[in-house]
Image 1 (tube, rainbow, N blue to C red):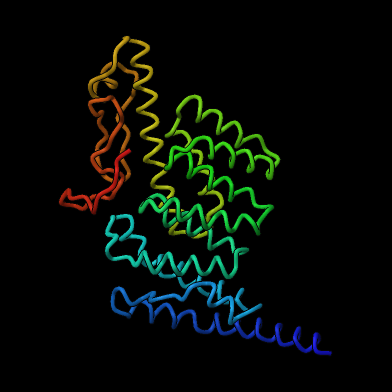
Image 2 (tube, rainbow, N blue to C red):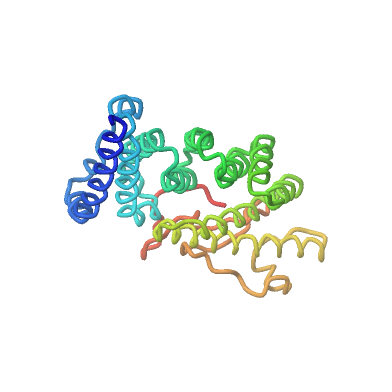
Amino acid sequence: MTKKVNNSLFIFVFILSIVLLVIYTPYFKKDMQNRPLFEKLGYTPQGKFYKAILGEYRWFMGEYLSFKAIIYYGGKVEKVQQRRYNEVEYYNLYRTIETSILLNPYNEDAYYFAQAAFTWDIGRVNEVNRLLEYVMKYRTWDFKIPFFIGFNYAYFLKDYKKAAKYYKKASEISKSPLFTKLAARYFYEGGETELGIAYLKTMIKITRKESIRKSYEIRLRALEAIYQIEQAVKNYEKKFGKKPKTIEDLVKSQVLKKIPVDPYGGKFYLDKDGKVRTTSKLAFIDKKGNKYGKSKSK
């Protein structure tokens, strides 16, 4: 009898939570927009505290915190793209999504968001990997988690041994040799740009949030342009037995039809080591030609 009452109460609370979420979402979003800067997310208690007092209802709080973080970030995407990081509450944002994942590690929106928001732009790769490791203990069927961890180790941390371990795990879970081939090609041929392109294409396919997907699409166009120039540099060296001094040399020698457009508004060039760089440093440039913030160029 007690079990039946508990189940009925659980169902009632669940339905009530959904109804309240639908009713109050517009008001919540409006309130968030009207609050002063740096007060929009606020402090989030540690997940262990919530876990202890909420019990089985912690799943709903995890969903709510994930929703809160994504709504907040959605309103800050333009500032992130412009590298105006001081206008984004990254510490509170991370704490919020960390608590969300601890309370509900089965929510894929939360770990997608962590991977999207904290790796490329602010470089908190180790922190994200720790969250993904935690989620992987629960979502044992999800090949995307070891895929993300493997990519982070290879692309950002240059730890190829650990990357290979996670790519192998992703391959075993998905029953696809794609990740093993991708890892082998990257490790033995040094195709960093190519790995980034493969990763972004995967992310664009599986990301449901339009604002995050759009950010990936812009970065993908930039990496594809860089890869096109890198291939032209290799062809130039094979043809002439020396490295080109400028990208214009590639066009003049007809190994490159035309210089690709940098979607961030900059111009591509070759540095003293022959590496492809861009004046935008993969950050948007305003109409006066000023870059918003600093970021390492490709």
